[in-house]
Image 1 (cartoon, one colour):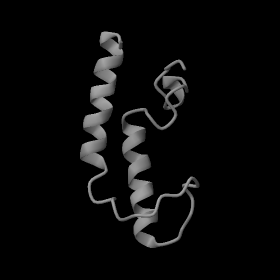
Image 2 (cartoon, helix red, strand yellow; image 1 turned 135 degrees about the vertical axis):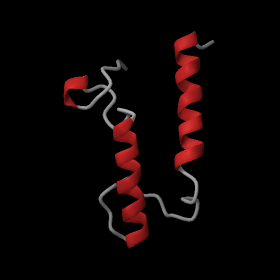
Image 3 (cartoon, one colour; image 1 turned 180 degrees about the horizontal axis):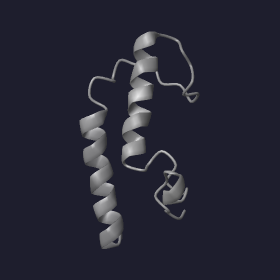
Amino acid sequence: MDSPEIGAFRQAVHQWLAENMKGSEHLRWSRIWSTRENAEACKFRRELASELEKERWLFPTYSVKYGGADETV
């Protein structure tokens, strides 16, 4: 059972994914973000990273000072 904080975070992530992943269903995913297989996929990955950065989710365990969220594993 999730704590209230984890439940709220889970819900926020679910909502964020629903809003930010629209239109990406046809893209081929790669475990390597820097792949430049096509311009559309590259553009989407860059925009996604930018949005993740705004939420401090790109590197969540980094300190806030360095753009993270000070989260623990």
